[in-house]
Image (cartoon, rainbow, N blue to C red):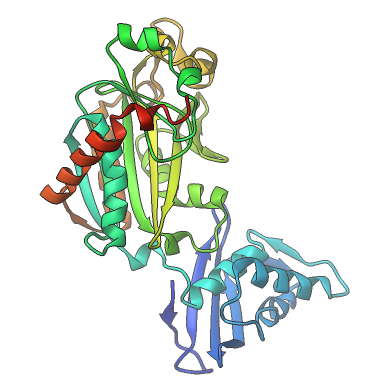
Length: 365
């Protein structure tokens, strides 16, 4: 986030902030002249020992080029602290957090507060259409025809969606899939398989500018984009945590997983699937890997179901989705939206020319 700030230095002083996940808020105000940082002030609700090291945090930024990367700024701060005669303890934050806040002050990043999200609630479509829309909507945003988007999937038929780099034959038992009438589609993101029967899981997609995760590592970006859903889960009684790289888990086991893809034009797709009430018997017959991984997904031996969301909340799937939407709207600036006719037509074209073709589905045999 880059905003004007009151400062005795200059009307051009800019401020950026970064909230460390599980840690403290770090803010940086700075002035730039001739593309270099000439003044900097670091502040926040963190802890620091010794007290006078605060001056070194700020001094580590001064003189740096305004185009410096997060890594370069963090390195400069670390070097400044290392030059002291005593040991400095950064509590609730680190040099990288200061660097990220500085990058935001320099205008290289955006924050959630800078964005208005177009929210699309659950609309029942063939699941392969949702897979295609995850390619269509980021390209629409890159072309300037759609803003940042948050959407919930819903579907009325069964499908296994495998990751972009997974082996088809290693993941799918073809006989089992045929026996249950379940098709297979490959998505554009990495990660593992999504076993999708009507009503058995909850899936959402975020389409955001990559500037929202500016300066974050891939691991940090996953947790950062799903921080809101941790709050949503807490509200419905699920104590969840993020497990690097891309899993959401509770005390009872894994709830779901995330995947991402970055597009040309500065757009990022991030989507998550969470198990609501999955028939583990069917999944085990269709997914080869499922036979080995059921133990970490909250399987209940009595009826062989993977139901972490249902069993932990006692809520209907529609109630959980409504809670997610309410929580997201309460945290961010939003506007209700819908798929356009052009977007749906483009998705249908991609289904026919890409996602339903054996060349794409079996790209990794």
